[in-house]
Image (tube, rainbow, N blue to C red; front, side, top):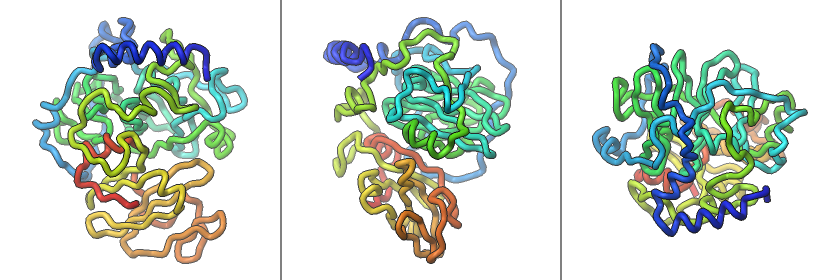
Length: 361
């Protein structure tokens, strides 16, 4: 347990008793150091994706469901000039079992510690020559990556379904993170281009990628890094362990505890959720989405799930420590199938956005 965490949790309970919005303000690190005085930008908007994802709510319904999380626009400041160190010289606060969000693009690997992103939620970066944003919403437990082109993403201060609503500084369009869909602004109804982000731990990621760079605490902002205002993941505590949510979800379902982690994916066929506990137990979970076979495989080294579209219903299984497709071994991240963008999410958040989701359990 890091120093100060116990006091943080007691303050959380006190604030929480006074109301959920008050706690959200506290956790939103309101110190006036955001970009309320940011100069106007002439950036263009982010690249848009030509794709179809499930839409279970109209744009008007989503905009009407948006609410203030406490902080205003950019009061939770994005990291726009990220600094990195090598795996041999990680930040002093980063423990082996701490969560990191791993990215590998064009042979370049980077890790973003959860305990840093909890204070910022958005990192505008360049990975493998690609201009990207790595994003994290602590209230929904979701880490996702988006291509940003010449634009940058910031934190709007709004929430939908407890989920971070980003905005791009080129067009000021609002983008709920999990939906990757514009709900207000010039790009309303459009989708962002995504890339895979892996929720794992520092030891697991650095063992897989010994040449990885890791985001440091040199963010240009003064924060109590190493002390999570919501609780902790190593071990799990506070908001992450408590089954109560700060804001009401768009839809509810009691098949699983509200904050049980599922691996979720969505595409033109529909949406799917696989409980992480089921995936760990079975290693390979088959099912269908909109009548199209899909398979989710467990990456034992990273404790992560990878979702694939499997329209030819090929045989996928574990043979010892290897994943095989029709008897041929492959890395879990490189099956000869169409890989989908999948990410960990709290069940209440996934179901709130995708109440028609198919569950493979």
